[in-house]
Image 1 (cartoon, rainbow, N blue to C red):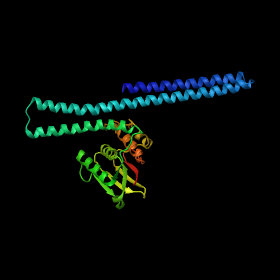
Image 2: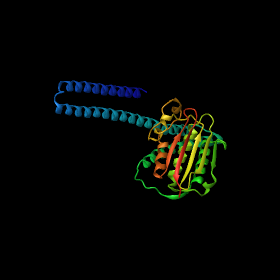
Image 3: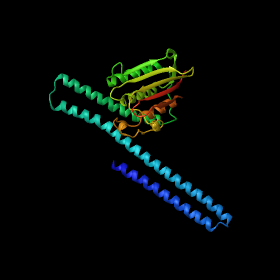
Image 4: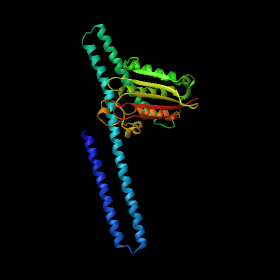
Length: 300
């Protein structure tokens, strides 16, 4: 919190400094024009110099503020990853020490093993997210292309999400249009599976007290197929709908801060879908009214 406070003060300081410099430049230029209004050549030169100076100051301030915000996002990402790595490691260590120092019955031992396996899966998921974000960030990376049954893949991701979070049959609802059975897409199976798994994970994590997620697969036309993931969660402010796909970006606010994350999930989704020739976008009526993520992919 103190670091954020200092950075906000730095932003305010540099904005104020730039505004003062712009005001000083305007005052000096106006005074110079008044004193030399009879000299046409000097007047034109002064105006050109003034425009260049103002443009340079505005450009410098813009880049400075952008860099400060980028550093804040990087710090938030490091803190989030540190938490996501440290928490399961500490949990696993605690249960191992318990098993080492005292006798436990078979049922309790089995429970400890299940918790440690769950923590290991969480740890592995975080590492895979970071590695995948690094790979998807390279635009020249080749795609291991194969023909994929999109409906079957989405159903598979749905069942994995249901098992991972221990959800009931009514928590995740799936539907598809009749023509989807013949809809195939071309792409990397692992990459697309990771993209849809991230969308489902977000829908569950950002749901309210009761998880209710609708997933649908439908054919838009002969060339495109659509996958929609809708939830009744905390929603997204309209001003943030395009920013959420940036790397490390997380929507600010108390509601969003309740859910831990690295800010990489939606970046991975956007990168993977774009590489496969598709597009992804988000819709939301606002905070507290849920959200819908739609993916369009070309058919083969």
